[in-house]
Image 1 (cartoon, rainbow, N blue to C red):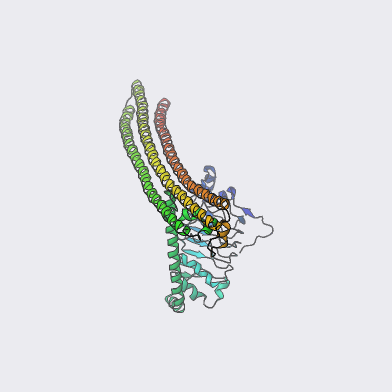
Image 2: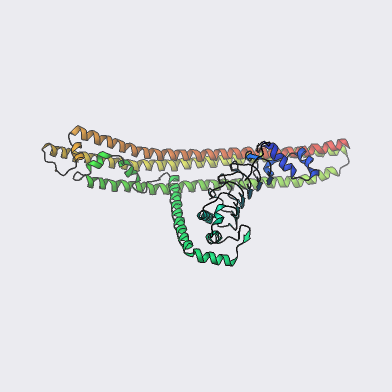
Length: 522
């Protein structure tokens, strides 16, 4: 742990500090040259910021290529601002004032991490560091030996330093760690020998077996959860999530207390079950249809990109051949000019060469125009195909949802009939005495029951319509996104290609101009 003398001002990492640190890595005779040429932070792979009284980590976003970062022997209190250092392999934060392990989630390539001599009391928030091989967290405030089991998730961990923590005073410390981390080669900078491994296995064999069983069950649950999530995402992409079952039906009746109350009436329970069965069947038909339509959309998109690539490759090959032929001829032409002593003839040949460059520009631009026309035709055809697929999907979705609405209307009519019949029975005081009080309350008068049922019916119809509307909106949003991307990608490609051609021609002209200037100087 670090303390800052009262006379020293704490620092925050800034451009001036890192510039100086990088310059110090250069040999003395090259430092001035580095200052003159400037340093591109994006290309820096190692950065040493030890002993600089740093209180806060900041301004690290520029170091895109950094693989090694030394921040030891400072007064840092919080691990932060490291999220952009995704290529970091080695990180030293030892001898600071850090209390919580955090801010490391994106450092998935990290292999060596030192948090030695800080104020950390728990090992946590490191789950993404699956490449970790060396971990030093000695001389902190770790007190619970059982917490070492957290490190079992790091299958590549081979070297661990825990020395100087309160948990090391436990008489079984060494055997516990070795037993729970069987792949460890070094503990507290000492090689783990076979004798220690055997003793650890003997003492904790049963406990490790239980732990491995628990971990296997946890892994199975996680994999099952991930599989379900992946399946749900697939269904969402097809716009038919939660339609492969009774979710929509159950949602429609989730807060319908009136229908739940009336379920105690004769025939109502059977009516509801029949309705549920038919409704779920329609939803599942829609679900299966939706998955098939999704595959059609994916095939169309894949086919489109394949055809685009074919056209682009053919055009690129033709362009490369034109340029190669020109450059071969250009070499011959320039050699011919170099070997010519008659200046008038030289000027004439250069004029011809310049004309050939301009002709090349025209040929390449014409080729690009042809490609742009082909691309436009493909995109237009793609748009028409997508529109047809989307139209068919939306039309069928409407058909399935109309079936759902018809089933809801039929159920509502039948339920009303039963309730009106029961009202008549109630009027004759012939209601079954065993009927719950809630049912009797609803059957007090026709207006009450009709209003209650009509309200519930309207709510359910709105839910059906909303589900159809959601599918329609998601489909159109996807269609718009796909087409906008197709058009924008082509605009960007065309713009980049034109720039590329212009730059190439400019370079040829510049080269010709330079030759002319050199001749004048001679």
